View 1 (cartoon, rainbow, N blue to C red):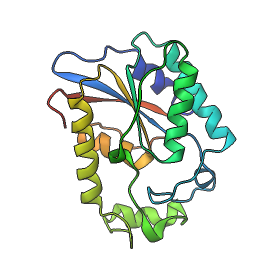
View 2 (tube, rainbow, N blue to C red; view 1 turned 135 degrees about the horizontal axis):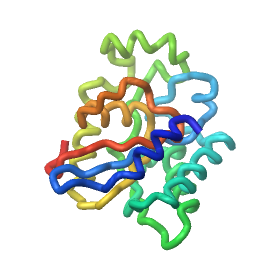
View 3 (cartoon, rainbow, N blue to C red; view 1 turned 90 degrees about the vertical axis):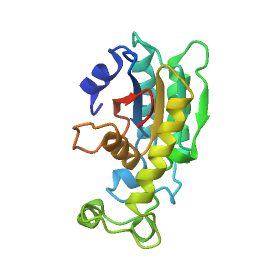
View 4 (cartoon, helix red, strand yellow; view 1 turned 60 degrees about the vertical axis):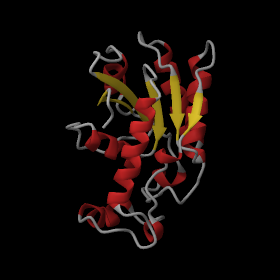
Length: 198
């Protein structure tokens, strides 16, 4: 599984130190668009592939043996993220972990760039251009920031956020992560968030 070493690092540390807390993040499992290297924003709602469902179950099985268990799963309501969250929850076993939906975790709306080749559109994103009919980067970052502040305010000890690649990228920016590589399908990473939010 991509990022397997990172999964181990993400789950084998204490939840927080009193000034910061850890928030776990997992990108949804593979979709047909992911397989074909096509853009898929929050304004496109597609399911997981069979392989993507297997990836999600593997994340749950990995988390099941973690020394520090998650106490909530918070997912984007898109079907690819919700299904990933459901499969992780099922694979954890034991008493069901509470599962919540948060619209703030929906991937950036990409408008006319949906379905286009990732490599062809990356220079446009890097240049900060807004996708025609989509969501501006500033608005997307503000939405994810507000969402993260809301989640931190809920007081979960160790939540797992289930969303898409762009949300993970913005979470990294908001929390000062030095990660520069995109998060892979079903990859689990940890972000440190101040107790007063981002």
